Length: 399
Image 1: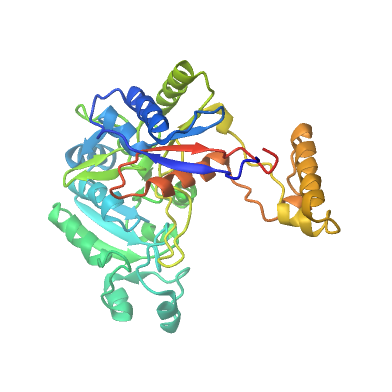
Image 2: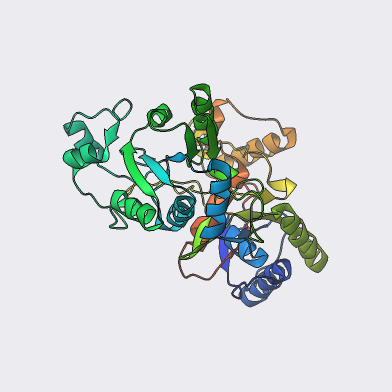
C-alpha cells in the first residue's frame, strides 16, 4: 500500500534544561525515547530542531541590567541618548530598556507609529487617517500624540506602551522625552548619539543616521557583544534575540550554535546510523492576521543548521500540472504523469525558479520554513516540547 502520510511534525518532551547540562546528550536521548514510545523509525533526512531558549539556558548565557547599563555607559558616556525604533514588548525589550536607562542620564525615546517593526500597534491606522496624520512625515511629541489618540492599550496585552516605557525609564533613574516618528533622521533634532533598536532594518537605519550627521550610532547588536564582569554575551547579535529571564536579567541569544548542531548530528549518526539534519530555531517568520504581528523578533529564524538544510525548495505546483499540462488526463493516468514529471525534475536537479509550473510555491529558505514549522509546533507556552522532530519534509508526491 502506498504511504498516505506526508510531513509529520512532532513535539518531543524533554527534562527541564539547566545551566551546565549536556544539551546534546539530552536532545538525542529524548528523541530516541520518543521514537521508542511512539513507534516511529529514525530516517535519513529527518529534521531535528531545538529551540534556542534551551541552548542559551544550558550555556548560562544571561546578562543583568547592571551589565547592560555598564556597556551602554561605556559606549555613550553622559550624553543624551536617542533610543529609537524599539519593539513594544515586555518580554523582548522592556528589561533591555531598563538596563539601557540605568546607563543613561537622559533618553529621547522615539517610537515608530502606527506600529512597531513587528506589527504591534500603538494606534489604529483608520484613526490615524481620520486625524489626517502622515506617519512618514509627521513628528509627534508625546503631548500631541495624546491630543490626537488619547490613551490606547495594546490589542493583546492591554498595556499602554507609551506610559509603560516612560515609567520604566524614569524608575531606572533617567530623564525621558518621547517622540513619535518613522524617519530615523528625526532623532537628530534632539541628539547626535543614537541607539537604534530595530531588528531587521538596523543596518539601513544606522547608515542613514551616520550619513546625516550622527556622532555615534550603536544598534542592539553592538550592546553586550563581550562579557561584562563575567556576564553572558553574544558576539554576533548582542542584545538582539534576548528574552526576559527575571525582573533584572535577560537570556541572550545562544552562542557557539554550530558546535551544538554538529555534536547532535554526530551523536544521532552514531546511535542510529542515519543522517538526521539538525537545526536550532528561534521565532518563526509568520504574521498573525488578527493582531497584525509579525512573529520574527529574533534576528534570524535559525542561527545554526547542518548543510543539508541550506537552500530553498525546488518544487512544482501539482494543481498547475493537473489543470494545464495534464488537463486531459484523470485517475491513475494523471497520477502517473505527475509522478513522472516530478521524477524528471528531481533527476535533472535544475532550478525551476521563474518557470510557470512553480507559481504559488513558497520561495523561502528551507531554514525559515522548517524553523517556522518548529516554532508553531512547540508554541510559546507550557507544552514542554523544546525539541521538534520532523519527518517527510523532503518527500514529494512520488515517495
